[in-house]
Image (cartoon, rainbow, N blue to C red; front, side, top):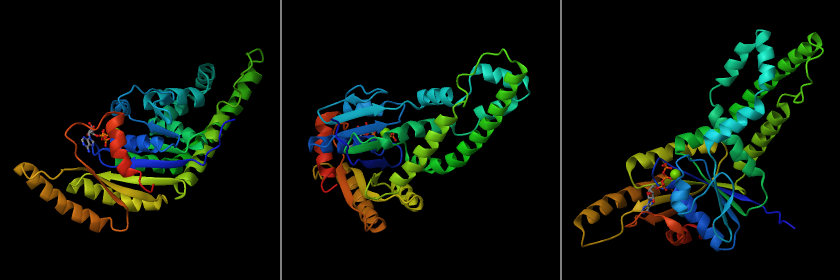
Length: 314
Ligand SMILES: Nc1ncnc2c1ncn2[C@@H]1O[C@H](COP(=O)(O)OP(=O)(O)OP(=O)(O)O)[C@@H](O)[C@H]1O
Ligand SMILES: [Mg+2]
């Protein structure tokens, strides 16, 4: 029998290139080694998770090691699936065009944010799974993630609108059938309404999960440089607005001490100054430090070593 687990969700966010994917993958690897069943989910079309793990990850859950699973959601593909599910059948569109309603459809197709909504919906499907102890989301750079998190709100009104348009269309389709009594039966009579309503429900549940500190924690990843620190600081009130708890602040790429290297020493001194600044700005948060390594942080061995320092008392 499958074990129902009380899943915890970990998100990693920060400016582009600071090490979100690496920290997410390192945490996932270390937790899986502690015997937790872990799924790491990425929505990056650049396949950075595959690169990080050193194993090809695809659109289906893939077992990486005994307890570690990974998946890369392709937002483009998600858009395709999503449109297929919610857009009425082509036949119906033609019939509606005949009734002069084509414009409304074109407008719907252009509704801003459909790509993001599609990716979000895919993402949400994992929020309902009870199969894992941890689900780790490797998210896009901060700005995107914050927009992503605000989508459930936007979506609520958006889905509501579509449902209304849909109802109008179904009414119209009923009329078409009356006018053309021999027209073939429309098997998908609710025109995707069921799917939309299910999605809306997922959104509501996800919002609850995201703002429950017992279930979801958010890890801010930054490097000891001004731009990165400022961006992370700006995200704090936004996260608070969504009721999201910050689990830890991870300062990545700290230059190790090397007295023989004057360049490294000067750079490190500068970074230590930034560290002081970080400790002041983010006082009250758990701050974790990760050193810059000689090689790129890739592969399970390096991830495991880095992850061990990150998952203490997680
Ligand atoms: N502590 C480190 N030591 C050495 N290399 C690192 C370290 N942290 C990250 N890297 C390397 O830096 C590069 C960028 O890291 P990563 O892909 O994790 O960043 P990201 O924040 O996910 O980027 P993006 O915003 O593009 O998704 C990768 O090649 C990674 O291997
Ligand atoms: Mg990344």
